Image (cartoon, rainbow, N blue to C red; front, side, top):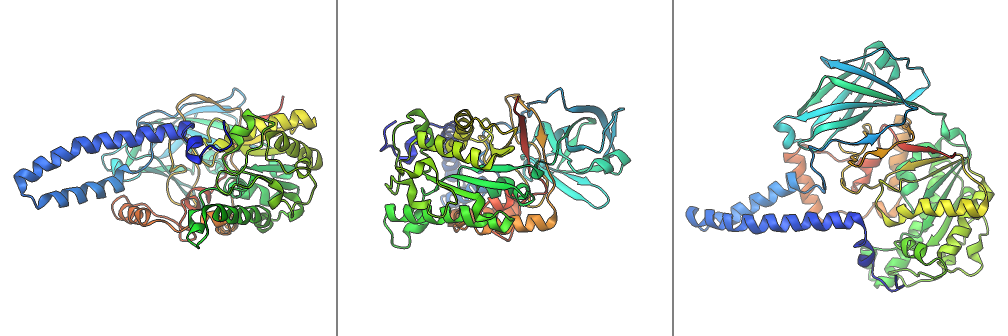
Length: 482
């Protein structure tokens, strides 16, 4: 790939963008079919009715058809659970779960309940959801409008209530089949280990793992890129495109070093590598070649490294190449010697920079000869559902949609206390990129969905990540080195 390729050229190569193009094409086809029908109706009803019909069609689209959902909500979720997980079949009667004989020990910290959901007719227009009720807990986990089929509830942290029969499921705009299956996982508390969080961009660590790293006494955070692209909001200050991107990169780089202090991680354990957003994929394909910023034009990664606590191989020449990136991470593995590395899930998270994180870690481990014992994988984005985790802020995280039979080695879903959730929300509020004002179209969409679809958004921030990331649980896929 040439160095001068545009941002859109790289994005077009991803599966996510292909799904989005197909979605938009289908919408155009629908509009092309619907418009002649509206004109025909208008012909018989009088010319004044066409604007009303168009307005109603737009409102209906924004309320119920604007979600980027690239699969049928009637499809089953498909996961392949490991033989090591404890499995129990059971039945659901009047909201109570009765499991067949199974030995669930107190060490079972992560509980996933397989259910079969069937939306009611109201569930095609309002988000169907399940209320998980216990004595001191009321959780809510939402699913797609019109959802039907296999889904996975996250009831982690509710083992005592499950064992005592005090756990109840109540449905809204849907019903559940009586057959259920429980998958239980036992994990050590990984926060008590030496933890390295790999964040491709300056808010990924907080979105995925603030609760985890804020409990760890030996956490370090490594941010791979400046995250400087798409700096339109900064261009409004009178800056040209390059200057706006440069300012955004500096601000997000500062955030990557400063915000973790709110979670108890000192600057001496935070590193900003300073590579350029959306360039990791071409870098990996040409390891010796330099790939400057797509928008600022900068080509020296040392411009945002002056606060780093450690000297790295890439500091010698500042070249934004894959060779330097692998060398930098290898040096950090030796310096911090993490037992647990937290990074994006390469099969679930579609962002090109996120996908490359696993390849980067593999090569850095081979170069450094320091191998972490455990990888905890997270997904801050999905290929086919932009709303997951669905539902209001503060509730649990059900397993995301997956239709490929994704193998699971293990799952770990620690609970976040109310105080930690508030701190996490404030950590996100400190991230410059999550404070961009919503455009008018999105504000109107939210108003329409609030009125017609019953959706709610948190007060602490406008960006949808405040709703998606500040949850009762955090969720990690566990891969143990063999």
